[in-house]
Structure formats: structure tokens, C-alpha cells
Length: 327
Image (cartoon, rainbow, N blue to C red; front, side, top):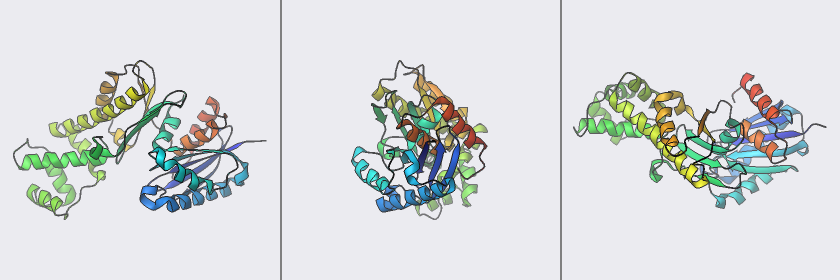
């Protein structure tokens, strides 16, 4: 008899559920809206996972009692004090098999590291960094709260720092930068004076979607843009080092799984991070996450049942790579 595993990736904008069998063969997929309790509350979390799980079960032609193990990566599940409410929401699914919930950042580590342990660093709209040791009994983390807690840098922070550079140019505190005309054009402002006034008075907005433009200006040779991206990479390295110290990874060979769209910027961002991390942990290996995080949730479901194999993991990732879907 086949064993079936469900993985659920709960995010701030969408929720994905995926079912696979013990060989890694895909069985069914479901999707719903946001489930981060910080955005929609625990009732919203409950509704999101119910809808996504029901759709996946229907697509797989399975009943919930046929799910041997289910893994959940939940955005907003950051602290031990949130575990009881998170598990309570999951329990409404009525699964008879084993379940486990982790922070959604951990899914990238499960999907990206062949051994399933190490450190995951996120640089997308925001930033986060978490890890665990080989036994998964020791965990490390940063707060994930961004600049407020001295943690950077995702696209939001990169754009924020770019606006500071524009302000410094305008006040003659800092040098001129090609970011100024580029961001003036992007927003439709008349000039730098108008852009800064408009940002202050909320007539103009610069969203994290402006980050690729900053990489473009840096690639054209602008020193300020290059320094900002180097700063972002260094800061990401600082987060990885913090988690590595918590886990005593300094002398170990371990995976650092890179997650998020900012890493599409390539060596300009990645190399400063790598250099910084290797100053503490020279054996760190860097892996770019190529699979959707929900794959990590399925693998978590397998892990809690002792059913994950390297072959099943590879089959699962291969099938997802070939799948043309919204995953």
C-alpha cells in the first residue's frame, strides 16, 4: 500500500498544498489565499489551509485519513508562544497522521539542502535567516523584523537605503548617483526635488519592485548603487554568521540555502555575503533554492514518518521542475 504525504506552504499572499507519494510522485495540488496570522488572524490561517488542503486531496483523489504525514511551513510562526494557536488551526484539518509545523523559511532549507540541515537565508521583499543542526534539536534564528531589529537586506531595505542616498545627494551630504535620475524617471517625478518632497508627502511611492533597477544602475558602474548592493550582501552574511554562531557551525561543512528574488542579482550580492560568511565558517557551502518551498513541506511530512529517501527527494524535485503550474 502506498503512503501519501502532504506539504503546505502558508504565506502572506498565498497558500500552497501539495501531495506526493513515498516515491516523490506528485499526486495533487491546491491553492488558496494568505494564511499568515499577522495578516489574516488565526481564523484566516485555518481557512487558508482548509481550502488548499481540500483542493489538493480532491485533485489526488485521496481522503484525509490516507495522509501518513503532513508538514506545514507557516509565515508568521516565528516564536514558541505562537505554536499552540498554529497547531490548533492545523488540527481542524482532522488528519490522523503525524503533523509538524515550522516557520516557512525552514521549508527552503528542507528543499534546498540534500541533507536537510544547515542555514536558510531569505532575501526577497524582506529578509530572514534560520537554521538547525543535523539532529534538528538545536535551532538558530534572527528576528526577521528587518531594519527595526538591525537586520537587512531584502528589496525593501535596499530601496530604503537608496532613498537615503538620494537625500544625501540633494543635501550635498553625499555624492551624486545615477540612482537619482533613474528613480525620478521610475516615479514620474519632475526632478530630484520633486521626488523627495513627493516621497515625504506620500505623492510618490517607491516599492520593493524598484530593486532590480538598483542592480541595473550598479551594473552600469554607479559607485553608490554598487556600495548599496555590497552592503546588502554583507548584511545577509552577518545574519548567516549570527545563526552559525548559535549553532556552533564555525568549523563544520554545512549548506547555506539562498532563497528569494534578490539573489537573482548574482555575484554582486552573493559574493560579499559569501566572503563575510567564510570569514567565520570557511567550509560553508552555498546553494540557490531552485524548487518551490512547498516541496520542503512535503519532505517535512516524510521526515516525521521516517520515510524520506534521497531518491524520493530527487524525484519530487525533478517532477516539480518539469511541472508547468503556478507553484
